[in-house]
Length: 228
Image 1 (cartoon, rainbow, N blue to C red):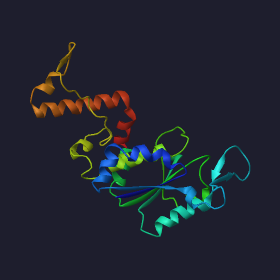
Image 2: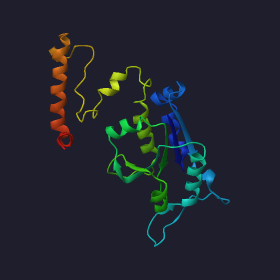
Image 3: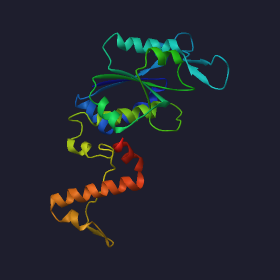
Image 4: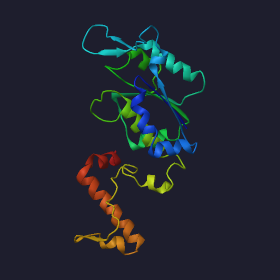
């Protein structure tokens, strides 16, 4: 899998992609992540990438030309399955979408900034618009890192125990059950007996019960999605 990220602030992505799972995946050759500075595609002495909005109003807008040039420089080299725009008014990102995208070969992620990008880019280039939540960040870089992390960890071989990813919260629209480790008794706080029983059938039944209970209590909306 190859992920190309377009941004006006590439420095914000240095740490997420140089540590932890994302770096290990890149070192194994399982994923190829490239961060591109949109300013490199801008013209003029100051490499301007934003301008005032037509019609007035507060805030600046990312200009169409440098972003288009950045996208075209990549699409001339290879075919892309998706060109994604990170924006607060995009479709809410879910585990189901992460699962789907983990099966793709090449994707571009455009990080929004200022008041967003020129609408014509969204109409003519963007194939998917994603929001990680109903709030606004300074820019799309952190959101892009979150999306990349959630996708890459699902690529076979990235996580040594691949069944771990399949039992994460949201994989089946249920929250994960509580987990425990040693010691079994800490200050009188004890691990549930069933987890120490060695009865794997009983353990799995307990975990399912806990998942359903936690989901009902904390995220009942997920159960409504199952019904739909």
